[in-house]
Image 1 (cartoon, chains in turn green, cyan):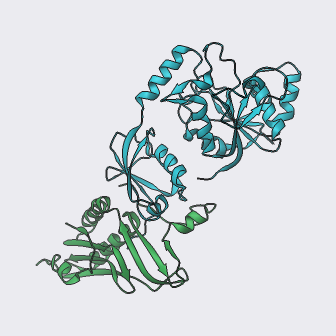
Image 2 (cartoon, rainbow over the protein chains, first blue to last red; image 1 turned 90 degrees about the vertical axis):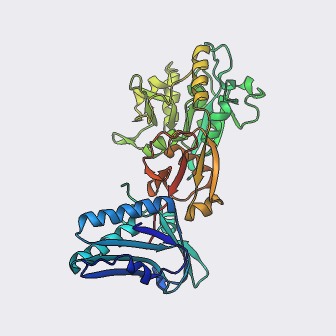
Image 3 (cartoon, each protein chain N blue to C red; image 1 turned 135 degrees about the vertical axis):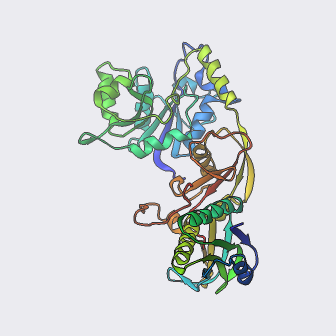
Length: 158
Length: 282
């Protein structure tokens, strides 16, 4: 299983062990953390929600694509859902490989595709007491904006 | 879904001679044609009226709906259209005949969105191009206020056919999304065929799951709906009207049975449908 969700803190030590390989000369990981601000607003916490059945399938397809494109040994992505506080880890990507170059490339590829393709949403709660679904509220409030001016990618068909 | 600053007019003053029964009162899936047409327009337009003759105002199929009674002389649908302009001269009218059983929500936006210019002047009307002969369909069309004086002139010169009027004066023509969507019923045989076709596409049950913003706007995370929508696109139109979703379909993806799907896929009973708002993982 190369992609999974968790309701609790991501156990990176255990995840890293799944990538071990005698032929691997190194490993690259990326951790996505909850930041205290976004677009000028002070963020206090986040809620992540996913359409898990489809997201797991699409996540596994992303990792499989990475393994085809880059000569790496193993890759794994774990995404957390539920309520997260500041500095909590929302997503973890790890790649092991014989050489470092392709490990960085594959890790970057996976996190970029995950952000763009998986049916995962986050609601930001702000210090002001307001809250909003990222990428959804502004579009809805300003339908006159063309998509070109206001880029956001939604999950693409495989 | 936005409500357009356009008024709707369902023409229900016809003589229904070939049908030998009042077309407005014909029933499809248990509802009258007039009520069905009135409801579709009401979901999208600011106000909707039924066009009636003076002797029809207490007719049971019509009396419960807001009416515009013929106020100009003459015969044919142009009388109803001119009477609507006489009552509300400043607004464009979405004019709809009362014998189009396949008319649906999906036919509103293509006309509304394509109202435009014809040559150098704003066209008097925006109409569908008939799938049968390529000519304008005047009775599922948006008529602009500028058409009113031209209609009066045309009628004064002895004209009574709205299609010939649009051919002569020029209309902005739009392709039909479905070539059969404006098939009309004039005879008892056509009525029984149309009623059977609609019964065969009778409502089916679909399972819908909502996530994130759409879950909040729908006020639920899942439901089973009974719908006659045949594609995810039609289903979204229907549910957006019900729940007031703020996201347009262009901003969404759709999944059927946990795989990404085309918007035009034909849905089957018990399919599980998920609309996917703009994502924000990571």
